[in-house]
Amino acid sequence: MKMLALLCLLPLALAVPDFMRGPDGPRVVTPLGGIKGFYKHSFNGRKVMAFEGIPYAQPPVGELRFRAPQKVKSWMPGDIVAIKTGPPCTQYIHTPIDAKERIHGAEDCLYLNVYKPVVESSKVLPVIVWIHGGAFQWHMESKDGEFTKPDYIMDRDVILVTFSYRVGPLGFLSTGDDLISGNMGLKDQSYAIRWVKENIKGFGGDPEEITLFGLSAGGVSVHYQYLTPLSKGLFKRGLSFSGNALNPWAITEGTLEKAQKLANIVGCPTAVVEEMVKCLKTRPARQIARADMDFMPFFFNPMTPFGPVVEKPTAEQPFITRIPHEIIARGEAYDVPWITGVVPEEGLYPGADFCADPVALKEFDARYDELAPFVFDYNYTIPLSKHHEVGRRIRHHYIGDKPLDKHTAMEIVHAVGDRLYVMGGLNAVKLMSKYNKSPIRYYYFTYHGADSLGYPMTRTNEDWGVAHGDDPYYVVGSPWMNPTTTPMDRAMQRELLDMWTGYAINGVPEVPVEWTPISPSQSELVYLHIKGPGQYAMDSDKDFGHISLWNSIDFAEGKVAGKRVEL
Image (cartoon, rainbow, N blue to C red; front, side, top):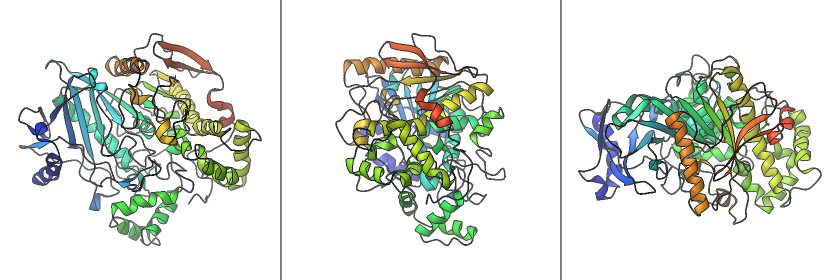
């Protein structure tokens, strides 16, 4: 096994320029063995030690497919050479919409990357662990072989860890029993965090000062790590950008039905679940990933056909055995500080695909009653007899009797964002603040930089506002946008770097106003409004995100109200 681990990493080494493989590269020693890396530079030219492509679990292939992650074997007394990121996990990518080949990645994908600025040798640094987004279906920060960029955050005294985890059916398929219990991707995350806890000291990191950051599904994942016993004690605080475990798409219904449909697509029998699972383990990973699109009838809606599930207590390393709301209300959530927040145009993911396309918008208008349950994610939880009523209530509230066209497209973006991101977030912070003693804070980021994810999402040069994902990429860089285009952008970036790394370093975000935590006794939302460089204020709103509308509808999240024709 030791030799196999070294041989598996050899192709990564061969793909890297010679100057990165020189004898002067950094080397660290961990309980697993030595790791050799390379040097790079931060955005402002600071020297950085980089270790890319470190295995944190055994490859989830063969009989380990659909299983919980397994401990990686030590490679001592040798070293591994970690100078190129591992591949993303096999996935059906969502962006760009016009991509010719959508199946990317490899099944052998459980690798992480560690970046540390060169500081005085005695200084122990706090650690930020970044969990990528992508609706649990794909790696949101992956583009043409590029991943999350450490360039900006390495100008501060923190260590950054990034990693890949299983996504789509390979990461979240479930048969509703112990054969494939589900949540493989979430278990990968917990395993990676545990790896950091046990090994980061060798890199000069403080295992007692680990902060989780995540965007979208990564933000949901950060929150989920509070709810699982697998991760308690592994981190000190968390930050969820645009995502939390009470989002409607953060829990999956109809698991066996979906598993059987997937089996049919790839040519496996479905009558006996044991035989179905045995067959699914033999099918090519790319074939399984390609089937993802057959579960989204309108562009990428519903956005998470395969996602977190409630497992049975008898499952292998069960991640959660109750719905998130119940875990929090029972006082079982990990009691450490948590911050979450949103931007104005959250609904651009996944709404941009049809809201920015006149032909698609016209189709949505014509088929609204049929498609609204998928777009607003209530197909599985609201009885079929009430679908029309709920869809019409949402439509009338946001656009009245107007048609769905370019004049009302932005209101649909807001409706999608309020339902998929805002509603769950507001309910989550209220619930967490009621049952946890640690401070829970909420922010609203409205600064509109020169660049935005709205441009690649809509495939236009039109101004669609502050898009889903714009805010964290000022800190943790992305290949999809440039947050340093103008002097104002760079000023905003410097302040956000200080703000969020300050949270990881000191436990308190560095902002020029007192950031009041959420109180469960308050009827209105109290939040930090980030308007731009030097523009911070505490604001409040009794109906933020039209929450009165959304909470007046019984969506019964986490419960299955009979069979639905989502498939």
